[in-house]
Image (tube, rainbow, N blue to C red; front, top):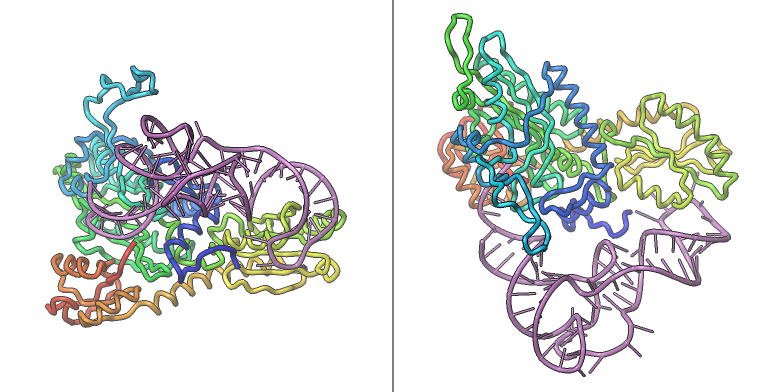
Length: 490
RNA sequence: CGGGAUAUGGCGUAGUCCGGUUAGCGCGCCUGCUUUGGGAGCAGGAGAUCGCCUGUUCGAAUCAGGCUAUCCCGACCA
């Protein structure tokens, strides 16, 4: 049991904050609202990046890089877009510092004011579409399937590590298409990529759906999303994909000549996932003993801890364990053999447990005699002693088992906390218990906002697979044709 | 931007009400010895202009005024 570590049931958000710091994932920085992602946390993010990047490439996308700064005028080209982001933009107004006249340090040089202020990108639609205008002349230039890995800044009032920080890392895909249908297909296809990644790499089950107009991205015609349920029953939007229609093409005058030699506006999509996925990963699997990582994203998959009484024994263990390490590595596993003498085995057990290492092997004098090894899996904390012979295959299989079992466990949790609700009275009590409420909704923004105001619950999405079903809106009683998901969200 | 709170070695804190030796303790850190199957023990050691400024006083971590920063609760949000 982790010492001095608050339990999820006692204070979930404190548990989360402490876990992030103590598992060495990230820490707060000198800059308000910005975090430092530490090497161990960044290693997880790199694994996510790698997997996603491969999936983007496999679906025909290429990486590119666009500027951090956006001319102020660009942002205001699309009316809804600017309205959505105006309140949280960092603005560059000057380009030079000078020594303070009174010697008190350095000040902004008032003579170095920029002609046009620059916005630190909150997202890159505008700068990218101003560029695409130059790239697109003919139907032969389409589609353009670009992605960029970048940092963005949204000046948030209240921040939480990974879940909402003023600066965060993400990828943003921006595509341009000749037809509406093709763009819509692209937006949905990338959502499927995200869902695939969430479930098969992160072991986080997600619900695919469409956002209500109220929750839609500023400037989009449709926003598709994947929604996950955290262990406290709150929803977390884990990824979004937008069908932007011709809004940005019109704002930036991006037209192409079609086969009939007629000018048409280009159709657009954008889609992104961010370091917020780290938050989803943490809050889906981790427990009161610390972080729990799915094997596919764990920077260390196997930790090996030797147990011994003296130097000679350690030397013997080193020699004995070396081939074991090699055989695990030969299976493609990431292995850490920890024979530091400054820490005792018990300390190491706790350390690797807290950091979510999926499998731990311990080998001591008794094992040397018996040709065995203690195998402990992080997700269940189950320990078994087994012969060293064939251990690499066993561990490899265990990785698979853990990966699947984490997903299954999360699915079971979600299922246990998802239920239909048909009356307003019931809604008010049920929403307090957390989880997803499947409810009929009359389709109006007024109803959605009223419900949000009264209960802090929002429509997370209208699931793709919501079956047609006649019913009455849980709030207004007006007719509805399918259920949507209500929940409190991060 | 409203409402509340806090600020003391790297971290967590005692002391503040009621001013008075060298600012105490735990964790961590350094050195040495003994240890190692679930966060080791002992001994020694380093480390703090008590958030900042001004004032009151013989004397301020402690009292007063101002400032700054951070955290929590709201409004806002991927």
